[in-house]
Length: 468
Image 1 (cartoon, rainbow, N blue to C red):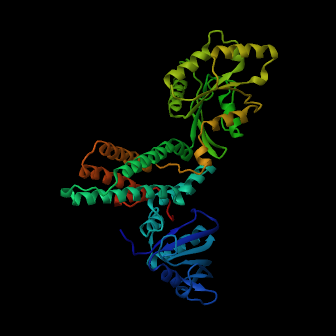
Image 2 (image 1 turned 120 degrees about the vertical axis):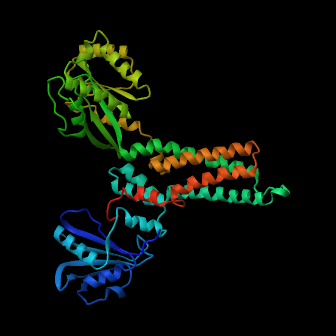
Image 3 (image 1 turned 135 degrees about the horizontal axis):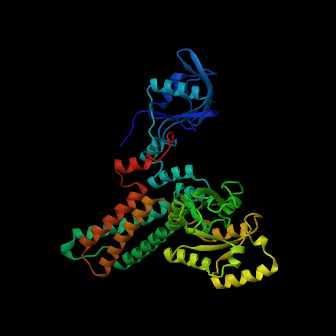
């Protein structure tokens, strides 16, 4: 797959702004730019050096459209590996449209989504996992997701996979060589070294696969469901966490009938908080639908905050709170639940003693006392939430997998490696082992782009923005 035409797109967000950048890439990019550009110093754009800036005007049949600054990047020393120019113009939407339409008439075509990065991949400037990291970097909205995308874009993940693939490929070549001398019964591949390599590859693949559990939630934000009975302060807690009046707060029970979601970054990690309808028996049809949605959100959440009104807990002689917590625990046994005791600012010393007694009945270790209204205990709650995220690998700058396609390929590669390992331990014939090795190499190649097809590339780059 090769492209010889020149493409154009707006590289900055659409809409009015101080400055906009229009990007052209392709074999004739500089010539097309020169045909519409008049330098203030009468320079010929086609004769200028790479990585230089030039001030002038965009001219359309004698009419000046704008004063612009043009950047020249000659291939292969450009982002795409092709001749590229970037036109920095004023941010008027009218000016943007006029310049792009002029360039289209001069021989450009509009770029497809992600086509600049696609050309960078096809021209060997990036491998496929690095190209995908570009999209992750653009969409990163917190420190953790940004750090992971940068590490992948710099080739950390690619290098790890490439080393494993190269070592496996070397042994595969020796195995294939043995097949050519099958009648002479010779071994070129040292079986002991091969077994050690397979163990090392298996260990690395398992580590990368395990990292996906952390990477996926960091990339997409960790969903946290705020649940409990009506009027215990769920919406007040959401507002306290976000430090804004996001949810309606009322003394009327059942005010929240639908879920309300918002995001917050804690310690560089994104969390998605979901305020849900209060759980109780009700004949109200609308409220019942809201409660049903509450349990759906609990299922989707990584962590559950179960909110209790401390005053209600003190008079809870029927252990309703314990029953409700156990109901969620039984339905979602692997879901971490933090019991949040709210409104502790209203307690007197005698109430305090009663509260401690009731908490001993619940016997739930992971509990935090707060006052959502007074915003006390909120920092402790945030720190507890952060403790559920394994940021050790992130702090140590280890490779973390965030891409579902990579995760799938790693699982399949691990399966093939384990087949090869079993074959080696069972003295399986070299020709059968060679088939499994080829399959493992194939799945490694899918990650970095050494094995590609048009459909795969189309699916990946369709998620990019135009102009990147």
